[in-house]
Length: 193
Image (cartoon, rainbow, N blue to C red):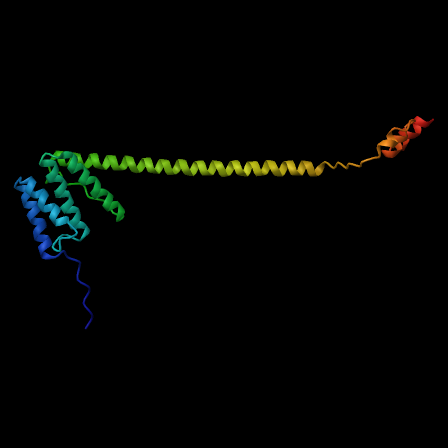
């Protein structure tokens, strides 16, 4: 007999029932109770709390929606933002609330949180690109400075100048004797004629 395939990961029955209770509280417009239950369900200390990402996302959606509907729209938007950040940290997207289930105000708060997060991510991306461009320009500047230094060294190497120190007393002798010392014997001979 072939081994059985592994069973799919399913949330514990108590977590599913608790999540259904949160959804029922939302539908019954008991938003303050919904907020309390959703927070309890999301608490890491709760052994019966949700653990699977999809269940966590649903619970956080209901928590944010209940906050918005209970008169705390900023709190709901903040919860959506925290949920999106947590999902991004897990390399996944946080789903948009279904407009058939949730009010337009809830969906608008989700969209506002998403725009804020996207703007923040775009700012970070631009800052990273600007930093990379600055580093590239600095490297290019350093390379150009090194090329200039090498060009100058080549020019200096091409110009040979030999300094021979002559005795000063020979230069004092008249009749072009100093020209012989400078190895210009034709000039020295011209002075002596």
